[in-house]
Image (tube, rainbow, N blue to C red; front, side, top):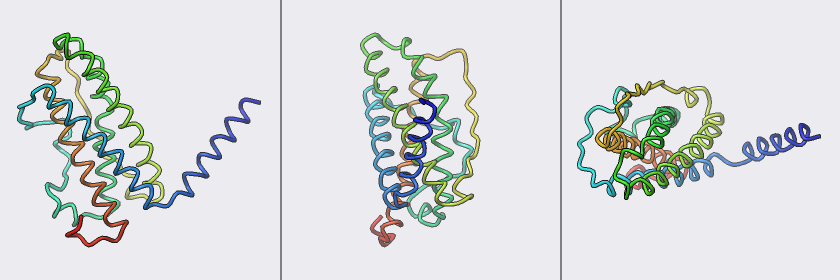
Length: 192
């Protein structure tokens, strides 16, 4: 009985997702990535983060460095890049979540709650981008693996570096999805 209900619910969810137009999915994904980037920005500002980001675990991924370059990249490739960056942060966010105890006590609660929100938004965005990529074809479904090498020492400096890297990458994801949203709305490139 419960098994049949689960199948029915899953069938309804799949059917509903397929019925949502790509423009709406892109718009929703863009809104979700905007929230994710806002959270990472808020968190790095709370930690008075002045850390210069040089080498993040995602640095090897070749991405457009500005809007002009992003406008030259295909929709499928932009989506693939966004999904690759997002996937690369699943393990580091877990590490961050479990490492808040090394921070001063006053920052632990805020940091823990914000990282939990970032994990939730990341998962929601990943789920949405997975649906979107399935509608856009094989090129959009490609994900480049960017391994995260966890070290035993996770102090405040490491947390600050990870948060700075996450902020940088969440900005990239947000920018790529905004370009996709502009294209889906048939806006002129200068309006993006």
